[in-house]
Image (tube, rainbow, N blue to C red; front, side):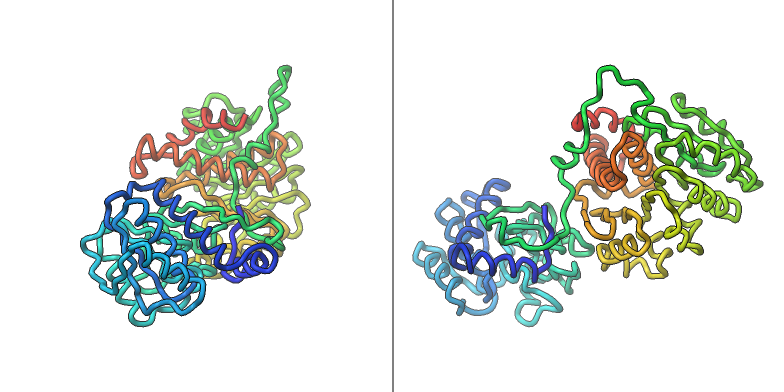
Length: 499
């Protein structure tokens, strides 16, 4: 699914007006589609519903919704937050709503309503609200009603994802035609609640140019081929995991477990000798290669030869999970990157190890998938985490393009990009925000690469399935109670959805 800025969707709609329909026709379709989405979600018959409208075109959708709710059996009223409409199309539907019997009020007493439908601004909002809208926003958030926002919650910037003071916090947002950036970028994405998209019949040829897209399950399923009846373990790839240390052996366990449950044929786990007993006590299926450790319990630089000897064997390499950061691990990381003959998934401490030598990425001849969280991304490009979060897509795409890598910028709505195409994930939940979740993802990406997916497709598929697995575990265990081991246990069965 496409994700558009405010200007991009305006151009799409203008193209539709020029070639296919009037603004009034499109407004009616938008209001009708939103009415259908909200009444499918909620039982609004005999419920008190306040439809809040401003003085722009988003109000037109609201007037259509108010009339349809009234006819449907809801006790619906229009709340004019500013003044009566003056634009022709909204005025038409305002008059139709009044003619149907819908009451109009300007009262900001929202204490005795069941639902509030927010049609105040839509994609036109930016900056801070002027009076009287500042008071309206406060009243909505203090009402205790279920809030439904049409297209975007009022107070969010559709393009940047920024929010104003007292931004309306929706329980349910109905995006019209496509998602907007505020639905997937922080902090606005946390104000949207559950988000659905409705199709209002804009023809495909109105969408001109390249857009950011969401990762869709149908696209992920299409990446997987049926396994041949006569296949053997060698047909599903050799994955080399260079991960773990004495203090962080769990990262190696999680990455290997995730790789195995994602279908890798053979997984070799290379760990420092001091961590080997700990890792081996939790895993039985992988091949192990214990190598020299230093006094910190991490890889010793003298282990390089033993590690590099396996690079010819591997179809994918996962490097860095729980590895620790010191002079020895920096040397090991650079040696593996330079010696690799297959795609490398560089995660966690592997990323931190190249922070001071980031130019090495441009020298590597094999595909690299980098999987930073916002803190690691901030360190890589000398920015603050808040800056990264404000411009996740731009920073991710620019970095990937400059360094000729695939970047997976983790977090809510993980971004996957090769610098040219950008995809945003919509699966996952806050319960996954815990140590080890990223190690699991790296193991999954490596396994899909080993099985023959392109690194870009593997990253997209793994990110989507990883989030889906988190959503499943949240239903079973709760967001607070779920563990990464719960996710890896569910992963194997979940993969059946993609066979």
